Image (tube, rainbow, N blue to C red; front, side, top):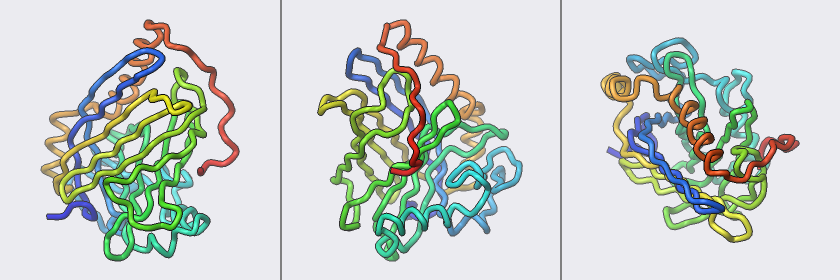
Length: 256
């Protein structure tokens, strides 16, 4: 079964490897959902609520314009403004952490935008920091041709995430999506020097109540744990005397 365009659950791990100015690495288990935008209104899965309370929940107000409006309008405006709407005219799949017992913090969510035959044409990486700020990076070929697993995309860093890195340099994105696995590679560089490598990878299975039940047994406090682990790792970097950068004002444009 090809799960790239179907409601699914990914259970895998995230790897962070800092290369400079000091070495620091950690690996954590994680789980996420992948939900086609067209399926939101009719999605009926035990333990999962869409814009309503449940053990797991997806809420429109956690994404896009953040006002509870349909994310499809936000996505359409972004794609049209960048000349991608004609190419990315098919299914859009959100990969994200859902709320768990009402709480979530998503360091980054991904909107995978496909054409009508199902080929990936653009990705919108929706980044959140712990100060309640948001920024979206649009990743696509200039001519909007299909994105393959071999393609790398460089985008300038425009948004403060960690106090241990400045708002400088660039990210390199790579997306490796198969019928039953999702892998996202993000490399941060300054002046061509590798600074940080991040890998989010997980095999996929259909989004069912049974899959969510296994998630609950394995990671009952995962979403709270995301925020806890961010602060634990920040403390570790502080102890290692990593350089510290004060948070600048957020960029005027929320999309780049």
